[in-house]
Each structure stands twice: as C-alpha cells, then as structure tokens.
Length: 160
Image 1 (cartoon, one colour):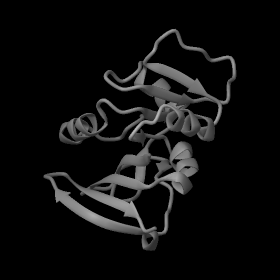
Image 2 (cartoon, one colour):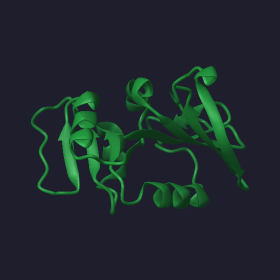
Image 3 (spheres, one colour):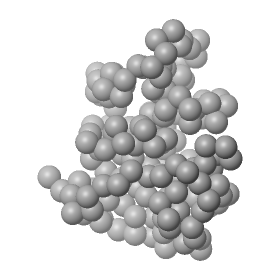
Image 4 (cartoon, helix red, strand yellow):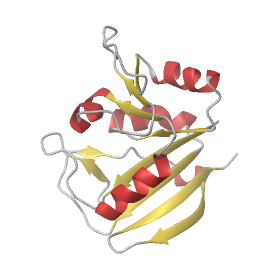
C-alpha cells in the first residue's frame, strides 16, 4: 500500500496559519488535489478537518483525534486515535493507496511511513505560522515535476 503525503507549500515553507487557515487560494491546485485524491482514503488531523467543516466527498475521510469519544454516523468518516491505527485499518481493507492531507502534526507523524509525496510548491511566500516539516531530500527521488502558473508540483518517491 502506498502512503502518500499531498501538500501545498509556500516558497517560505508555510502551509497554513492558525488564525486564517490556508493563506492562499489556488483553484488550479485545489482541482489537482481533488483529481488526485478522489476515490481514495484521506487521513487528516482533527484541527484541519474542523477547518474543512465537513468530510470531502468521494473519499473515505479518516480523522486522527486523540479524543476517544469522537464517533461518526457516516460511512465516509472514521475516527482513529493514532496514525498507526488508521494505517493498520487501511492495510486491513487492502487499499492500494492512501493520502495524508495534513496538518503539520499529521505530516510529521506520517513522514516515517510515507512511500511517496506530491508537493505543490507555490512560486510565492505566504504569511503563516504552520510549516511543512523538514525532511531529508536525499531520501527521495524526484520522479517528475509539473510547472503551473503559480506553483510547481513535484512527485517524489522514497529511495528504498
């Protein structure tokens, strides 16, 4: 099973702002995100999920929350208290791939398990206080990159 981090990252490594949420609006990147993740499970932290306000359609939404009392009445939404539990669940369901979609704490926790990353690097810096976690680029091969008007998408796979 592929475990794929997908993220949009500003030139100064910002991925969000605790007050304002996502500090930019790039419809082309949202479209890419939707097309890439549609039909696949997504793993998301509770705070980031709260910002979204509802489950993303066409995907199993798996929320990591340390609050053990959180329950869902929807088949499209599951809660787990740890990333490891969520990954084990996905393995048991034999999903081909799952996407980790944030926030920073979930990205940090997922990095050791991640097989691939799809990172949209904006061509601008942004104001914010939430950063994408540092990672060793020497552990990754860049498969390809796609330049867009306001960002470049880099497809990375972990060197085995």
